[in-house]
Image (cartoon, rainbow, N blue to C red; front, side, top):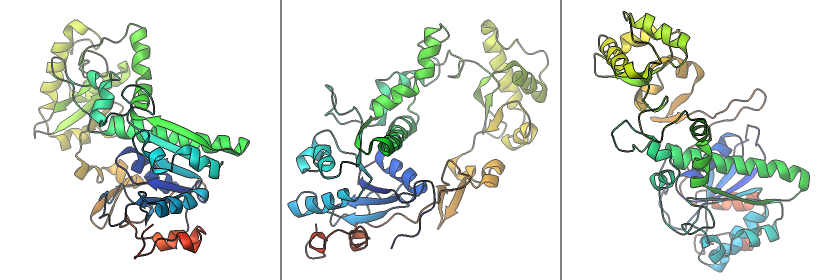
Length: 375
């Protein structure tokens, strides 16, 4: 049986059709917040996806969606679910017989969350793509990088997880809230390209105000300004500087013991200011500078690796990153005063909980997958 859930979403039933990237992370967040998340895997599938962190906190059932028996089994689960997360290309779910029209006709309260790269419609909707492609067409990738250099992909955090997962999560939660008033579910059409475009709202605003140039590395927040950049230390490590406001810049200059630095906002003298900052940071190690800036308002922090991050005193004090069987896990976020979330158990093997879930959710025995007759 599933362990008793904590969190504000306790009691919510979520089906996750196995996929890659954004939809699994949305499922992780729902599970962290207390939802009962069940992943639908293929029969005979190895541990796929084999990610011990991204796959945590849910159960897995094995269902063959290429056969009528499997489709009937999934639809029986869908009848009892609050949310379905579907990560396929447009039209795939419909061809399998599990599209939103079929599911909502059977369960009108279902929130059917669809996650794609390009969206359900449009000339590129059927094309394959990855994070780098989706953020490329929104202008976001063009803006990331240093002056005179190429665009720099920011891992797959900006598209897949910020533009994808977070907007799918927002849509699902909004649809659940609306269902409380109307009694009806609906389809949430979330796409990475549209979510990423939404994330660029600030840049579009400052561009309209004449405060942003469509060039890399020449603006306030893209390493164009020397007081918003990273600097190498004596031991070859890095410090991150974000001293934008004048009083924070003054504190930066004081703690660096800089004599007569160029004015903060004199763009003509930014090259000189950058060189002076680089020279100052190069005089001490990252550890030494971290001690200097700790507890100050200079807006300076050490650049840590993933392996180092958990030991940072602020992250350690809050338990932001915790280790379990040698694997580092981010703790559930955000935090709640009355109904705290909880990090779920390890990622399940494909089909590990098939019999358990079908029985617990009240699916008729005739639709249960068996070892000799996978659904």
